Length: 201
Image 1 (cartoon, helix red, strand yellow):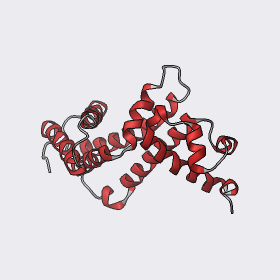
Image 2 (cartoon, rainbow, N blue to C red; image 1 turned 180 degrees about the vertical axis):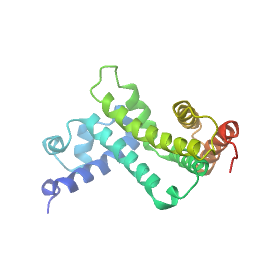
Image 3 (cartoon, rainbow, N blue to C red; image 1 turned 45 degrees about the vertical axis):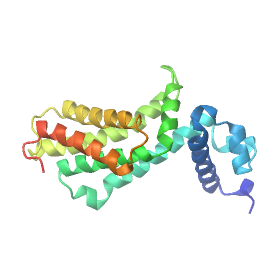
């Protein structure tokens, strides 16, 4: 079976796999549809049959990444942890994700967006998945009285800001290892927990 005749799901996965490699190699700005055609040995018409444009391909890569992250949160091992343990596990994941070579192109992609961009609602939906997961953890911690206060929104914002800020800073330090990135994120969350946890575990 030729690549041009792959079933739709297989064709999309094939294109996304090569697109990911392309974005990692060239960055978002310099990667072109011509490059992707060359990598996949597909025509532009075939690729456009599955994706609207380069932006659409990148969004689907981001969505796939968030789906993989969400699946980790839903696994029994994570669900059996206490709220503070879950936050530390999230910090560990955020830190290790700094080694994800796709992240540098994500910053380029973000810089291409304008206030009226059609993809902003999609980006916000992806962000909301992560934000809601953190809110559920914080809400559970407040309910169990392992986190102080009752303002879930503010506590969740503080956690999200801490993790996002730590990631942005770590991306300016490309010489570190995954373990070192993870340690920085975990220490940041533990410092935050020392201020809001009644009994840091």
